[in-house]
Image (cartoon, rainbow, N blue to C red; front, side, top):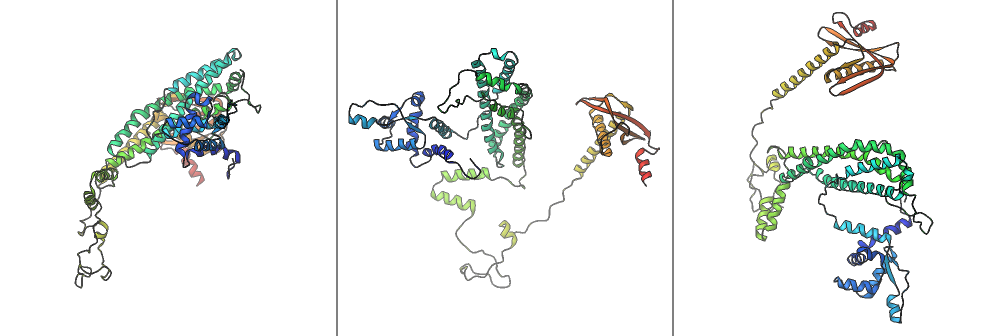
Length: 522
């Protein structure tokens, strides 16, 4: 298939869908259901007389010639095939009635199964099969154990069974997740949720979605680690699973086996949990969609809680109005229409069109009357009265004081962090710092690197400075192969390798290195 056209073979394959969308789709669906109901329908063949009788039992009466035409149409498009089984005819009549028998093709079975699934589909939300995550992890661990210990001694059918079970669980997880987020996307695009819908949406997000995201976060690192260990062993696992006798088609090509028994099938599993180059994993996208859903939830909450002077959604009002129209008789519906939309019969406005002359009488035709200058207040708001005085200016003094207090608190925390760094003056090898001091150290480290603007060397160090109280804290950074700096804080451990850091403090009265450099340049 190219970017501009579909080749004839693919067009013929897609033609198997036509029976479900043409004018006689009901008849074709009934016939296909006869061939796909149970295993017996798939393994047996039926004649036009058999199909006619079974359709009559279901209440669909068609003559035999019409049924024969429908069966021939399905044969033409690849849904059915003429049976190769020979029939015994004891008379010409038996021969004419049994001369053609039909059986289901694999393409027809696949297409009809998808059609039935589409017809049975509803917009109801489906739960995510998160219970598959522990089974997927256990299956990967078991396959890794088999591949690491004498794989050639394991029964190929046992390996194939474990692989197909793993991918069946993965397919259920992916399918349920896709359907759940398809439903969730429909809700995310709406910003007119009523209060009842908002409560249901909130329950789906906070009570259910967050639990699923937590399970994803708990299992994803383990699954990703096991898949990374198993990646090089996948070809050997697939080869062992395919070591048993294989079915070969008439064209000499081996028949396709279940998903997972080919090495290429594992790419989808790896992409979902680990990702690929330049693409995040689908499990990570699940967590990102959860964040988007929470943002949409807050947007609807803000709209619902907004004051009367803000824009409001009319969704609930329109639903209530539609309910009134549905239960009203004809006269009452006209009254509701007039009250809701104000579309009365045509009439003149009763205000002076020309202040200097006489008002236009209500009996004069619009065709002959002069154009009226409608006041802007009446044209815009539907009211004649003028608006009141301008509202009072909003007082932001409390917000300003809060921002100033936050800034002062941030400056105090930064000063305390610099003081803590100054207490570790000297060569910095190992130190335990607070999170604020660690952040201040990383800021000085970044300033020193940006100042140097070239690879570090062992001879010429780079530096940065920070003022605290009456002193200046100076950080010198240089390359030192084989040396490392270990910084521990409540947030974790930071290790800088092949670097040396020296902290020194000088009096603020003495010119710092930065001031001396600026004076030298001047």
